[in-house]
Image 1 (tube, rainbow, N blue to C red):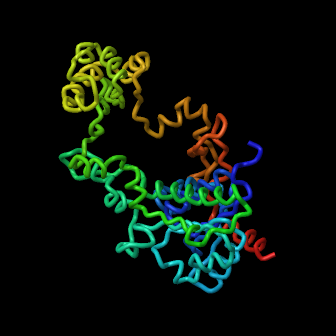
Image 2: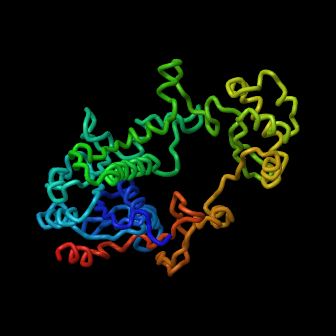
Image 3: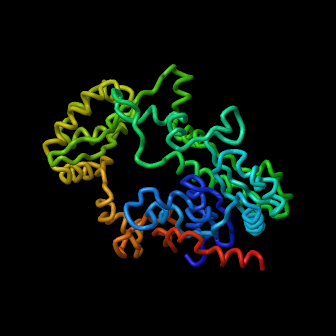
Length: 392
């Protein structure tokens, strides 16, 4: 791609951890100049999260790729002045501090709007900028619980589990970036229209609301039917058969055989056409009522065969199925390779320079991922360059 879609946009990232930096990463991936402001000396704490060796974590390199790093202490007069000078040349500001923090530093939306009339401000917080819980702190772990997701994850006879990533932060970051692009696109469609009021240029993303938004019909099912969803392990309530099934070699596969036509093909593939023909198994609600019987029949078949044989048989039958991939599986997968979804860089890992693969850019525009241009920068790597430019 000769010109990246967001080339020419400038974004000031005042956030840390995962949520606002995820929004910044999306802007940067597609060509915006993203200036990440970090506290002097230590920088974003992500630099040390899951850092097994060396000075910088791979998490930082992943979340903050394609960005520029500027060291500023926003609590000082110098830092405030410099941040406002940067904002004067930016289209979007991203932040994920507790509500009121930016205002206490003299960097609230009104000050940012005076510096750059028409600026879009993305604010990510635990519970949003308004409401009885607005001032409370909160990380994604809490938001995933409050937002209804944690109650659905895990086995029914054990405490709720958590997904293996900070999904609440990531969702909030994606919504933040999308919200900003919505405002920018609306303005671009009619450049002669007056600038919307500041209240319509503040994108207010609450972590718990971002999580709630992906719980599908959790709330409507409760209000309409009195249903209290429960944890079902590898299953999805009301959808059957769809689960992880053990194979002879100790691996497992995930099979989604819950479509009505797919179910019939699935049962034929495992040698159980009798189940496909049963009147009491012709739709999802009926199959869910007999999910234990179905899962037992499927696992009787899968556990007698190695994983690759199971997957081959299901592929031939047109039944959606896949392996439970580890990182090692992903880097060896030809499908990811065909779309440049693992991209390699030489990285100092603390015991020498290694060739390390990083996730590609989603979504694909064209046939392959856009190239990752640079990994997360060194702390303050661009301070002199950026501040000098914005003062000339």
